[in-house]
Structure formats: C-alpha cells, structure tokens
Length: 238
Image 1 (tube, rainbow, N blue to C red):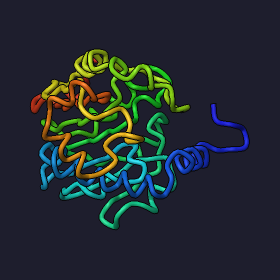
Image 2: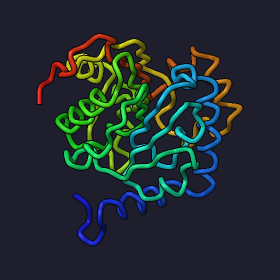
Image 3: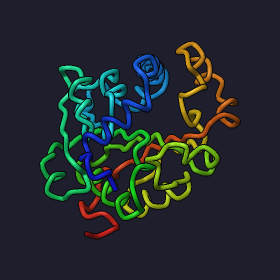
C-alpha cells in the first residue's frame, strides 16, 4: 500500500530516485549497452516490434535495435529518459481498462526485474495473460528476473520486493499459460549491479566466461515462446 500522501506514480519516482544516484544511473546505462550488444540483441530481431514492460529508465529499449519500440511503465520519468523512437505508455497493467488501451501486437516482449514487485501469483498471471494476448503467434517473451533460489539472502533488501520466484516456479506458470520454454538459464547475471560488475569491461568478460555464472549468478534468463499455431485463449481461462 502506497503512503497516503503519495500517489503511485510519485511513489515510484521518489523510490527509484533515492535508490540510484545520477552516477549509478549513468553506470547502469553503460552496462545495459554491453548486455544488449553481447547477449540480448541475439534474441531480438532488428526487424521486430518490441515492447518493454516496466522498463524504468529505458536502458533496454533505448539501446536495443528493432523496427518499432514501445515501453509501458508507471514511473513518469520513463518519458523523460526514452529516446524519440520509443512509444511510451503510462498505464497500469493490473487495471483491465487501462491495459486495453495498449492494442499493439508485438514480436518480442522484454521484462526485467518486474515480477518481484507484484503482490501475488494472481497478479503475475494477469501480466502473463496480457503478454500472451499482445504477442503475435511465434513471438517470444524474454524475462530477466531475480531467482529466489540463488538470491534469497539479498532478495528482500529492496523494500518493494514482494513475490519470490524461482526458475522452476516461473517455468511452471509460463507453461500453464501456454508458453513453450525455449531458453532457461537459472543462474545468469549477479543479483544486483550494486557492488558487482560495475564496469562495462568486467561485464563483457563475465558474459564470455559462463563458468562464472554458476557461482555469481543470482538472476535467471528465460525465453518463452507463444507457439506459431495456437488457440488464442491460453490454458488459464479468464
């Protein structure tokens, strides 16, 4: 529950402004550039229509190469940080009327460090159903997410973390919705950029030395595909 004198948008703006200094935001932006060039871009075709959900300061959507780019986020600062080629929508995906305002069908949906902020599995299912509806058949959902199995000691160091997920529980719900798991990396990036991999050079090296992921990885990476031929109603009904 948001403090009474703050609405949800102002709450998010103040929370993330306090969490990351200007210097840290600048460093994170440089790290995202490396992550996209050396890993994520391979999963996003340059001719794709891409949606970033909960993209915050636009580090992913600004750097990724795609034909069309969209971002959904409640934080009003997203519009300030977004490049001119990014369409930004400030809508609450847990509000059925608001989420219906975004009607674009897309090839890729990217979600990073978002599910842990949901209150329960019912909200997670709502978000996944939205993704299912907006993805074209054959499109994919790309998820970068803290893995509670390997980050439980630090998971609740951030006040807005609510829903713990492991790679197994996330795989289970994705498959229940109807997605096919194409890639599942239980241990990928470290849990947080704070104190680890603070330079692009270190991150570039880390991405090449995959054996390090087994020891330092606290976040998972998942690629879930909407089958090319599928009934538009997923396994979980409405």
